Length: 211
Image 1 (tube, helix red, strand yellow):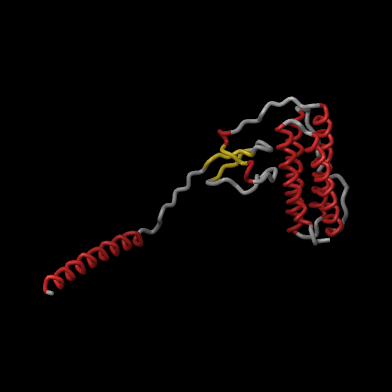
Image 2 (cartoon, one colour; image 1 turned 45 degrees about the horizontal axis):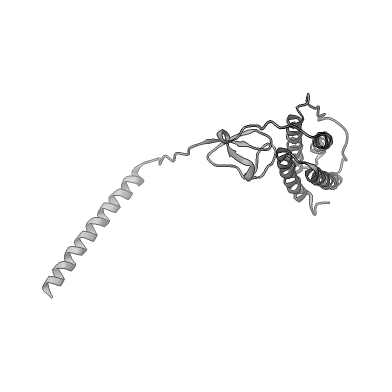
């Protein structure tokens, strides 16, 4: 019995010494005014628009074109592919470019006439995303570019009307791009149309139930 008692005291003493060490370690940490946290930033790139992003983790959506996270990779893992377009895809991409330019101009107009800051910010962001889509299509077409007029009068003075038209435009774009996707044989063109369809569906959610 005495041996058990001594063994118990030794164990208790060891535990007390351990807790003292832990307490000293915690006090040492707390005595520091600042605790430095180091984040390793990385460079990411969107496989749809090709734009870069610097951060400590991949964003859920491309900040430029709105592509979903699955299309965002380490910058050193992807480069813009060279492709030969069929005549069908060339024609469809030209039509898609017209849609994106028109939608961008509409959203710039809606942002300018928005009656509140929240809708102004939303419409302006949508305008820039559609402009990025237009830039992406121009790269695929290897054409001379496009011009977007920010001051074009092509929207209503009422937010509700512009939200309704936004919904119509996004629905129309999804229908067109779904058709273009079904007709495309080039893997790169199919990838871009698939991504943009998902993005336009995101845009639909912004106007649902608000007009």
